[in-house]
Length: 114
Image (cartoon, rainbow, N blue to C red; front, side, top):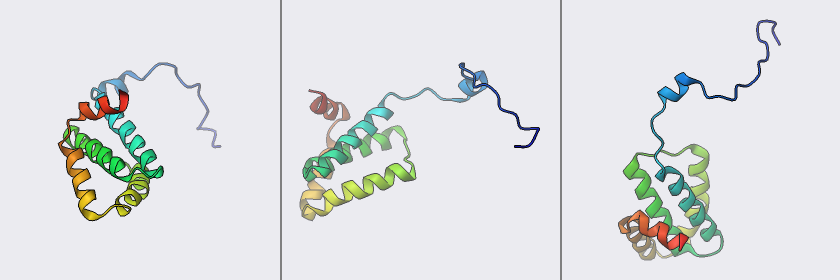
């Protein structure tokens, strides 16, 4: 290590400039990722139609709140949810996606949370 670079203790407090630069976090962001996680798990357990429907609902909500994804998360979805789509006839995929997009996201959360 160069002499000019010295380790420092990590501060326990957030930097005030960093805090000011952030927007207010939308609580729906985490919920959409959680629903996508459930959808991917369902896809892995052979519940393709439900997985596709839930993923479509989560993606519609993400689009509504302006969330963008990262490469790793998108590639996980493409792998697991792509397999679910491939397991269904095209008309069933389209129907599941349409139903997912048209269902209010709060109803999706109620379905999953009981």
